[in-house]
Amino acid sequence: MGHKFSLVLSREITDEESDLLREAGFAEAAFLSDSLPTNADFTVTKIEFDDTVSPTLAEAIESALETVKKVPDLTVPGLSVPAVPKESSQNEPTVLVGEVVDSAAVEEPPAKKRRTKKASAAAEVA
Image 1 (tube, rainbow, N blue to C red):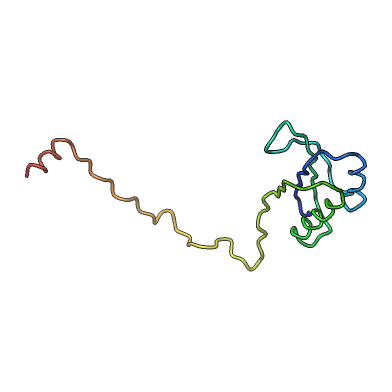
Image 2: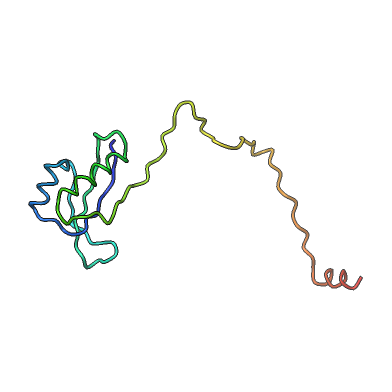
């Protein structure tokens, strides 16, 4: 599994610009037409990555941003990175904080006594 993320470009790119980006390092990326998140009427290009080469997600993103700069007047107003579950190591306990409690040993809290209106009124007079 690689580093997955998406870039939303500032506009829709041409076929020539797409070819330039593919040659510059986006060969495995998926190019999609999308709308700008802040304006659904404005069409932009979204590029989805699954980088298996870069050692870290940060380096994969930095490399992609540098590659986009090769196209004049193109910027990246949007970056999307899906949540990734934390990998557990064999040295990490499965429970980080707390203790195991036997469910039979758990006592129910005592029920609150309900006061009737008469009992409340009598208590106020006394």
